Image (tube, rainbow over all chains, first blue to last red; front, side, top):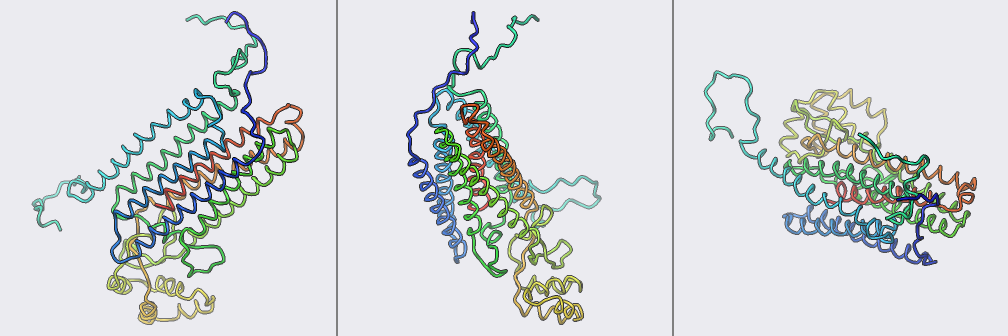
Length: 143
Length: 295
């Protein structure tokens, strides 16, 4: 760095495809994915309305909706926000830190589930903080 | 500690070429959006944690089943929120078209698409205002902690979306319910009747009110987890605030385009940066839509 050239930042403009065809194609794709999600949402609603809701099927549909949402996020970021047109280093500095979310989601939902398990057992009941004279209640008599 | 001598007026991002082939402003916008993604992510994941930690959560298909001008009895799950989603997707498209026109240095085109984007943002905010009003002023018969029944709205302090109350429990709770609450509950059965009918109701005795209410076969619930309202209004409010500030930014960009600032500058990069923010708002909505309305 022996010399500093005062010049405008040197950047290379992304190649212009000229048309807006790609934008509209992604718009229709996003609309289609959203309609698919709504369809699955209504399917979940109807399963819940039924006599014996099939929990596995509901979970499967919810998983499917999550995947479709990730697909929508990919298209919005890659095409609408033009991240797909940036250089690889740039993409990596944005995408790699976001991988923290994988741990973040697993850890905290796991924690929530652990709280539910505690809540549903005696271990989850609040410890008695004040001194009580009466004899402690036996396990079997609690419910 | 000594620091390296730096020539005055050095512009760091101006030396050589940007390693990311992007201007300073654009890179910083990306980093801001990444940090904002973590903020929204933390909110949504904390909501997920609480939701996983309780045995019953509000069913979005019951909470969000109303539509403007469709009346109180309408049951249209997902309808209104899909309208909001399409409004935001479409405003995202007009934004990216504005950026495209900016690349072509077409001022008229940028103006037209920026205006459409602003209108889309305002339409979305209006929808959200309606939805909030609907929830905050809604009347749902719910069991209170003192064992009586009353109507509850959905707020950060009350959540009427718990498990259904069995018929016998409703009848037992009605016996304990004081007169003014019975009048309110009976009032919800007559949405078409006006204030005159309400006056008649308060003149009725408790057993008369109870028989009228139980004859109507009312639906009542246990109160749900209190966190529901806080998370819903907190997260959609934070997102709505982003939409609002996005609309303000877009209005400024529209004015600057109209004044010819970007033509003088020789490029429309500011539109691109505003566009990044606006697409991010759409991106967040995709996840809010998923977490609150779909699953």
